[in-house]
Image (cartoon, rainbow, N blue to C red; front, side, top):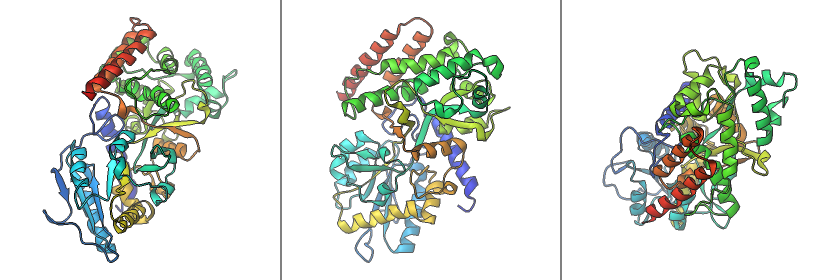
Length: 473
């Protein structure tokens, strides 16, 4: 904990490794951009103190904390945090950790008991719908008041927040600012600064002009190759697909649907066409490209832009022969031509939301609020959040020196604090991996010239409905 910078970089590297490994996975406990399955599972229930302990003894005012932890890979850390906090404050904290893939089962069992968790986790709106009877309104809590971007919270139909993220990640278009500045200085450039690029129309004008001037800029193409090798297409069939789903759900005022209309299909096509037609290689070659190919092209300065997330910094910096300086690695939102997108930020989200049990005793609720406030506000707690637990904590209480300090993490925080609206992660509701694989296969056929766009759209709509129906049975 004393070697803060080293610990922070290690945490970021861990996140990069997890994300690289889970890009194409599917499961209730993890999806792209979220937590990968831990290397080793914890027992079905691990908790601080001796096995078989009764409810923790109450503190002087009668309040105690029981946290049901989602992440087996940090169980040991949580047990130590609980013990240290209890020793320091006299408030008993118990931590129980569910084994990988069993969280919902354990929560269902524990929440109905006499010693129910006071602090637990949901994975987003879908999880909230399952547990809303136990989710407390967090409007007046420190964790919500200090949330850097309050649009990231999970809200109920009444507009009140019931889940607050304790760690976040972001993805968008990563760009090499040195190449962009070289382009802006050219005569007749379609823009003179990155600030002018705040819509798809402006992005398209800049990209197509840069592609025409690629030789003068010393690049092979504006965008890195769009990886469509089977299993390597998650940036498109999940991350990019999140945007049209986000806007459709937002327009309809819903959090899920059994019948996606893909009404923002043309917007998806806008940006996808821009990627594949202004790239380092021809569209017909994309079926052989992996994510590592894309990131190497960016790291070696062969292109100016690549769609990926903040976890990609490790991939960029570790490429042998890397020519991109850290100060030049930046983020911009993914623009698709949606009305009002000039106020859109990065795609920022998580599957990790804290909830407080509304049915717990008042004293326990107060003790739990105080415990979380300590984690996000005290020097010791903030150090634990970042350096012990590896969280990119999305709270205004963290100074720049108390946050992960890689360039893309910095860009993520800047976006959250800019006042722009982050695009939430909605791919947790995608019906199945089969759906995503079929979507990716259709995109590859489109790139190869074997499928018209209307057929791609039909594939998305049809397979979404089929897979939703299958999971409902």
